[in-house]
Image (cartoon, rainbow, N blue to C red; front, side):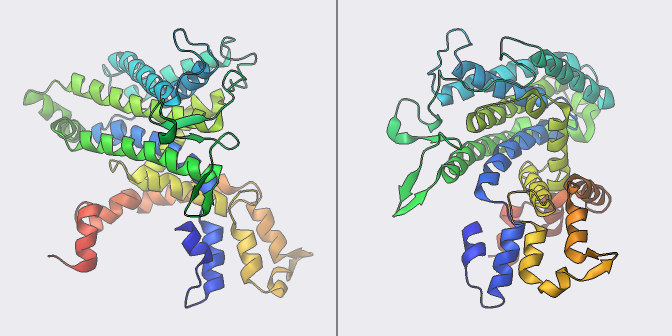
Length: 393
């Protein structure tokens, strides 16, 4: 789609459409990060959006998954050598995150509302402080560990021990593939392989939501006392949902570590990591599961578009291509040109504009992007959109 919108010669204003697509759409190297973090945001939405319990400490599972992969690759986990296949490491990391969710959930689900949110946040902060001072993970734990010489090759996604069915991910250590004479670079291969794991994880969570277990989760969100009154053990259902959510949060963290080959406490266990997942869920639509993917993509695109240091095209290069030079160099006041004013307004202020967008979404689009679309269509997008476009059959 990116290639089509940026290179196709449209019948009307092709260069303007191409330039706008380059300015707005993130490039494939950015999309890899969008995918694994979107999976983490979906795992956050799985528990917070479907049971109504805000897990402000969800970063603990993301960090556990990420650190577990790096420690296994460095041979620092007993019984798991440095050459352990990545898919095995990913599964181990996810199970560890799930077990951590059991421990945190057993304590936290004795509370509800803001107290639940605060106690989960407390657990995550304890782990954050712990890993920042844990010498075993790295010589300088504040900077976080990186994959060492014990695992020089890229982390492979696919079927373990079958070379023909695995491809390595990573910026420098990833595989390249030639398909129909067209070479796919390391970023493109990583995009498809990380996307494959994210897609399988999404379908697994979607299957749970549409099962009887998922209907009880929604019943707890709507009225927990009524769900308990008709005989459901709500504590066990909440704990089960929390463990599933933690498991896939660990998968997301493992993908992050597998692609970047290094992690830091700030990028994993820090509470703002959960804040970004909350932002993606609110923009995309709380309780929609797929919504956080679109929410994070929207958030990422806005940051890139309004940043003069981002990897995407950005607003300023787009204006340089579409506006006459006389407009950009026009003097506003005191020698300040239009281009200079826009550059100063954008310089390091992308987060400020994202904050404004966030406030506007909360006020005027409370159901988020996907939730609003569902409300408009009157049901599931996958079911109602084809009927809306081509009519009922």
